[in-house]
Image 1 (spheres, rainbow, N blue to C red):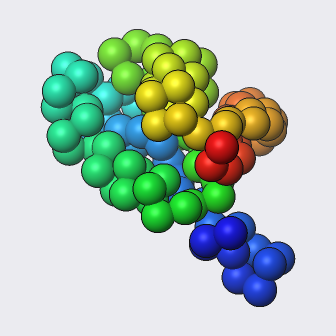
Image 2 (cartoon, helix red, strand yellow):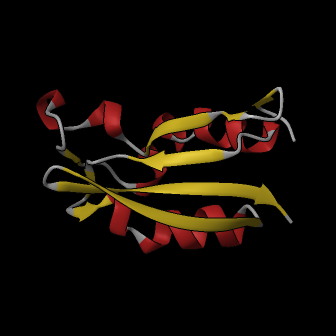
Image 3 (cartoon, rainbow, N blue to C red):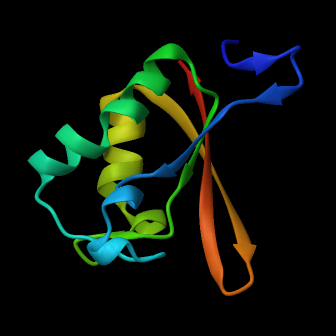
Length: 108
């Protein structure tokens, strides 16, 4: 599998998606852009990582147009799983008062 170091460490693309574009740069903030801007500015690095075989993707604590990323069915299920044709296993972790999803992505 690509992106594995000696078959023991998996690469993880973080913090999916739009984390670097939150309003006023706030942690756990809101990325307020349309889909065209989200995909043209914030998606290329993740898309490239998935194509090259990254084994995991961790969602951001941020929101895209008021929907928390870890609850965004369109971007997680419809795009990563269905459009990119990757099998996605979603594991949820709790960190203090926040939760995130770690997406284990393997090609079908």
